[in-house]
Length: 166
Image (cartoon, rainbow, N blue to C red; front, top):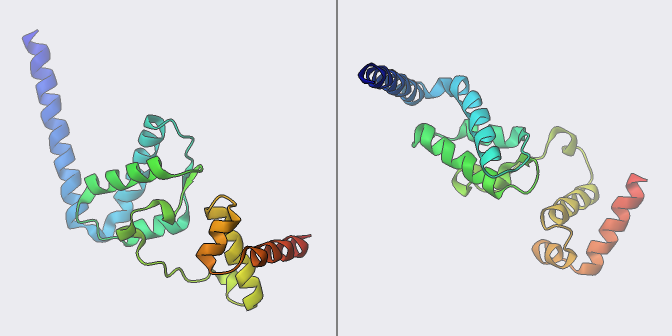
């Protein structure tokens, strides 16, 4: 029995030493974060998906980009907390920027994507209206309030979007 305790104790010391080395690497080589972050993100995502019994499949590239650009003063523990929170708050199968804490997602200043660059203002308005509607679960009154337009205008934009996609 004493030998078993010694083996467990040695293994615990070895694991603690390995963890310390990884934390040291994570802290001192922040520019190499991608080497450690992606496997950790996947590990924490799988861990919390199982814990919260949610069928999560991953993160959007936008969310990954925000995580990559964050300075991580809390290191691995902060990354774990952020992913755990996002897993708890997400409604769908994929974590997006909106599921991340405000200090990581930053002010809402998303630049348009490449295919949004050369579209008309009317088309941009339709797309934005549809995104807002999606985020508020289809609640047209709430979407109209957020957008500062009437519900009648919401219905018009929805009709235009449907006729354009047909």
